[in-house]
Image (cartoon, rainbow, N blue to C red):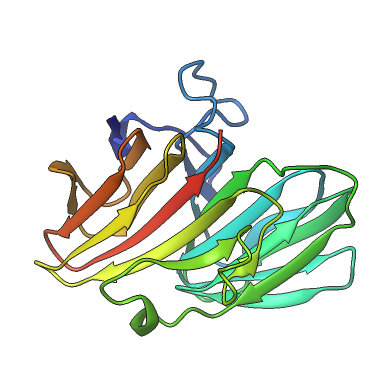
Length: 233
């Protein structure tokens, strides 16, 4: 089962400094049919104006992954962590028992991010944050785990949930596959470019909700950058 969710069908909000599109219900956007996908709860497509951002605010009991598509985001939190994550790179914040953080675009141009929230497997652990560069060449033609709760994904940022976030870049005409285990839920979004997913066309920033598909075959119709979440129920 693959359900294409076109970019134009997504909920959203325009706050001036922030233009957001929501793949799932979030804030004032509420769609009972789009409350999450397995343990995946939030996938926001955010465009943040230069010299603006999210002021300090708290979170708890959530795995929050930020994939930077264009520009860079600067993070600060109540643990004393600070970092700047650039396009193509990833940061993970495990909110745990509670953390306060800010995310600002201090760049001269707009920054575009995917913000992904996944429900953790347990509670009561201390909060943490980390970031890592993932050069596009290392995921050329194949999916690479960027953040993962699986011990075998040793190069990925750690997650406290039975899930992984993967990235891939494909040249026009290239094809790659991903094996999806039984009873898993997957959600795929082309950050750039268009693809065919098991014969279904997806344009840039469309979403695909996937279940009971043992093999995902992705063919690039043009140069593309992909983000995929594979999660449990």
